[in-house]
Amino acid sequence: MAKQDYYQELGVGRDAAAGEIKKAYRTLAMKYHPDRNPGDEAAERKFKEISEAYDVLKDEQKRAAYDRFGHAAFENGGGPRGPAGGFDFSSGFADIFDEMFGDFMGQRRGARGGVSGRGADMRYNMEISLEEAFKGKQATIRVPTSTVCEVCAGTGAEGGSQPSICPTCTGIGKVRAQQGFFTIERSCPTCGGAGRVIKDPCRACAGSGRTRKERSLQVNIPAGVEDGTRIRLAGEGEAGLRGAPPGDLYIFLSLKPHRLFQRDGADIHCKVPMPMTTASLGGPIEVPTIDGGRANVTIPPGTQTGAQFRLRGKGMSILRSPNRGDMYVLVQVETPTNLSKRQRELLEEFEKERGPEYTHPESAGFFARVKEFFEDLKD
Image (cartoon, rainbow, N blue to C red; front, side, top):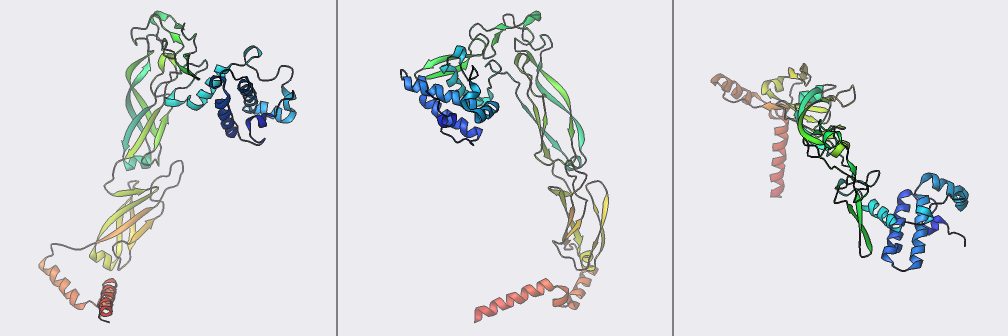
């Protein structure tokens, strides 16, 4: 009997993406798996066919060969088969379970199915100033963490002995149990999923292969970092169990509030209070910049509160770029207080001499609109 087309077996088109093929296989495998259809030979046969089709189509090289030559590409023993030419149903269902739940809570199957034991990732919060974010810096941090045990070199075994293969799971790290229609796979209770057992644990680390220790690390903070930037130090997290790879260290940066500047991305804003006389008459003022220098700004006569002046290239450093943002000077005209008698007399003289439409155009315009408002109410 001729084999059905693999794409038709899974109900997908020949141009289907890998994700679509996987989804179709999961659906059919859950439906026809023998554990869910005990004694049903048709379901068993269907499960073999869809599993064979998926084994070919999930592999790019096998799929390319099949697309070109069809079933002939796998003749003479080249076709996908299980152990000794049969098919391992429990393994097939375990593969489905792993694809759906294998990464749950960070548990990954190792080369032989055991838990990897990779060390946990760590987080370190660092607060830096705006000037440090502008220039960048080299910082030394002290991190309490788990490190590889120096006595047993991370093996967890005492006196140079080596861990042995777990007799319960034979080194796989997993055991299976039948529950109704389902074959459930759990971590081995004897070895905890490691696949190995230690008969004589190291006294220094109690067999874990790691000890608690405070380490000093050098951290390079590049110029231009922003609030919330995350820096990853690969392999600087907690040591793994019994020689497993270490985790990573993530440094989260936060910026302290600055006494003069407010940051907006690569730009900097600076509010500058200004005497009424300077705003009225105009003239040069000097403002500080984030790089520690000074910049001159020429204020035109009649400058009002809220006026902004842009200084190009005087803002923050831009990460991984030689360029800088801009600086914006925001004017706040200040009303004088605690006037002397002579100052008060001068202002009173100014008040008598001022022309409402020319010296205070915004006030004149506002009160003109107020007058129109009340006149409209009378109509």
